[in-house]
Length: 450
Image (cartoon, rainbow, N blue to C red; front, side):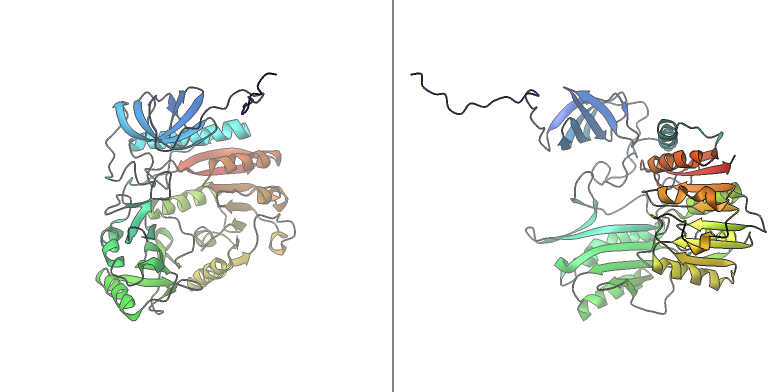
């Protein structure tokens, strides 16, 4: 009798499975083209590589960040043959910090990349092109960011506090001593923050730090245990030195240590001051935000006798300037605390022709009492998920003009399909360069009823 063969491994019908590529492996690659998010694309042995920090035509050495099936995510470690477009990265932390992924591209090329991303999504998903392309709305490429969240984590093994920004493609924290995209008033705070936090008695109880520069400078500390009197004194001295408000976020909502201090930001062209609290949504680029509001009003062309709807209104960023031009503004937001603050912002400027409502805007509008009278025009500024349920009913409101401000070209394109079905034409579209040095695309589109 033949001896039985033990331990046979039968090959599945689909063929042998390729071995997974380990994280950290280095690979030499030739970059074929750029993806829509600014990463270089290379092809090797049946796999598609997406490489942060690489440009089309370059030969690079890439380090693997992760692999899933036949898709490999990596970052550039060395450039053997550089593209003519490549510029020296302006930031010393480039390639490690995950915040600015396309700073090796000149700013005009960044704008061109974002324009292509928007055009490709509208064409591929919605099958449309605007009747007119607007010029990109942009400002300074550095020193623009007025709000930042700083990661803080206690490394128990090394017994040290890590302070900085998240690394590219991981949860590691990159120590940051200077960030070129922060507004100037936040730069000295950012550089001195790690040393101050390391003096606190319970570093393992610290969460994150949020920095904000508006009508005042504010430093918010998230903490998971009560602060000692000595720690509070250190924090107050640090903020006093930098002429900044101190906010603390323990249990409940963030609170200022001095309750009499006001915090907010201005919309100078409309002589408006909007109250803000850490945790509220606010556009991080003040200059582009003002230009965006002005362009939205120009495109929407509101008339003095009109009733206008502002969806996802936030603190009133669009609603309050609109209220200076029309008979009535109805503004709707999902977060109740922001609805209350927006109403207070309107009342503080005697804009009594505004009404604010809280509503779940992921649901249809058909049952909303405030929607029954109809509107001449609509402005909406949804989150990345878009506004699919909202746009499905927009034609029933009677609006002839619609301005859609988007932070995600993919959901804008998806919602455009629905608007076109309802008889709207895409009259105009363009990008908003809210986040220079990143591949993040914001856009504005004007739709008109046929």
